[in-house]
Length: 428
Image 1 (cartoon, rainbow, N blue to C red):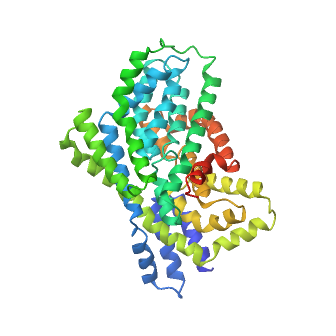
Image 2: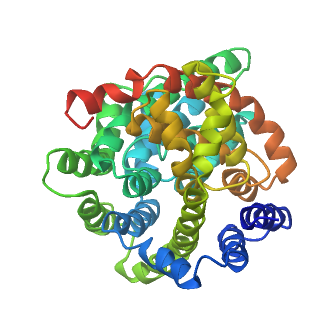
């Protein structure tokens, strides 16, 4: 067999036996080098060493730490409280609050898992206390968390920009429209579901209550304004913005809200390092894996295969989405971005898709993948937080794939949803 055949076979076998993803990528890559006498192992080492050598990628651990600080420092409570005063009076109001809170928190965390593990725990408890059905509680919490990496700042956007060479600011701008769209589609879906369920309707909040709730949440609400305004205004880079996020988060959490003590910072640093470690390991090994795909001209094979039976832009984009949905069932977002970039870039060029738009489509597919078995990290987190077995969580979350797939199709085929802001502000 050819080295590339051993390469793919090893990767599939390692996935089937549930080897950690970075070891799947590394193991299959080393097997390829072992069977290919034309390449030196030093080439592999060089590719792996160069992969994380990026100033832009430094933003990833800083954003992760910033999200930890915000989750610990009372920010999530204020955001949820403010959303509740605005929307709690509707039937099924806490479901709308769940979506709106996630939309706001997305401008802080940049991570779907941070949303589920932080804000999601507060949302699920509040909904359970008011006797919401489990399918609503788990479904809306999981589905709304997908907005986390779509609304800027976004960790996947940072990684995509670093790997593809597009502007991080452009990616952040492009995420605004799709993030708002997903939230609207989810709210329409919620309306359809809850109108026949007799959920509690709270009295409408007075102007005074809304004002004081807004005032309490204002330091948290200013966070994305300061950070994103600074990036788009050219005052600092995304990496510098991530550092500012940490400083601002510490000030708000310790001096304004006073829900966090500086003494807890070492613990948060340790938790952040534990989250960053696997991501960097995947970046390093996926870079080598992606280089092999390019070296073997897999991208050309895929392009020729697809173009052999269709040149239709709509069909090509549909095939790409189907491929990414399946990939998202097995591979997490960082690896997926790095593995698919060399394969999808030529196809997207043929389909006339802007690289920034491509990044939005890719990321949204991977966020849906977090809610699909067998490797749906959001599903595992929902199971852990709710106490329900994984198979039950999957059954309750499945209907919520519908609004997410609808949103994905709109974002894919209606380009201005993602690209109007980058084009207006000169990032595309």
